[in-house]
Length: 319
Image 1 (tube, rainbow, N blue to C red):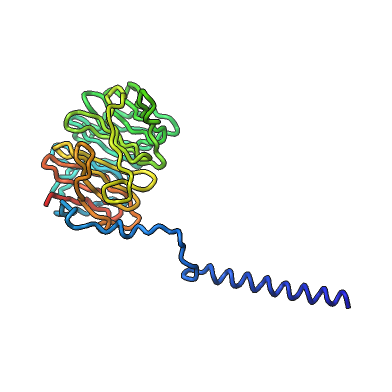
Image 2: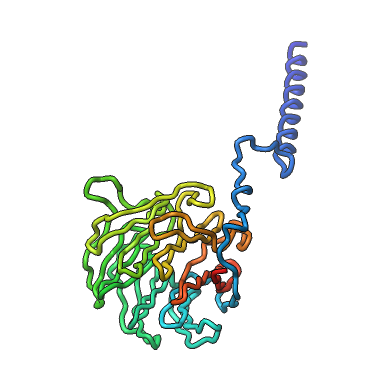
């Protein structure tokens, strides 16, 4: 009788366990789980007051790329890279030239005389006709090249993998590094949680670099000394949110900043002093959880946004 009681007890226990497992399985099905009381709803922040939107979309251009990655503007020409190629396009949309590569570019910068195409661990230098004239391969295994700019014969390369800005002369010889620290340790290097690390020169020839983990833009001398910075950490429209933003930026002719963000995609403008000015494009313009558009600005201050999700080039002009 004792053994029979143990058997009955084990059978009942097994049935209870099976019942608990079934209930837990059903509760874990999509739509059956209770709402997360700690979930942060960003929907209210994606709705932008129309009075803040200072630009309108003038036109867009469908691109023959499966994955466009970078854009530059120079001399009334657009330089777009992606897949394993670069296209030189007139603003009206006419394809002027296409150049093929054996790997996928990550970024592009057109100077007055050369075109610098960045790959993950190398740079190709082309003349303005698209003919390759040099390859720069003196990078480390952990390098991730994300942005390039040139000023007065020095080429500046943002290396997100090493978290530094590298400097080269026009012959590709290394000229030093910028590590993103001030002399008094107020800034502790570039904080780059993901491969978004942009740099550019304004119209006065001043170097600005994004420190994305700090939601800041920092101004350095070409020798690497921190001069000033501004920071805007907020999910509200006037700030930058998430782990690392802004993802890309460019300069308007008057020295104002144009920024784009990943996560909740927003394109905005800030005064040269860093004060929020207005919105170029609201999140509703872009794919949800899409990629931050790379940016370029023409001589008239029109803004080109490279929408890699919709595979198009979008032109925004001031209202």
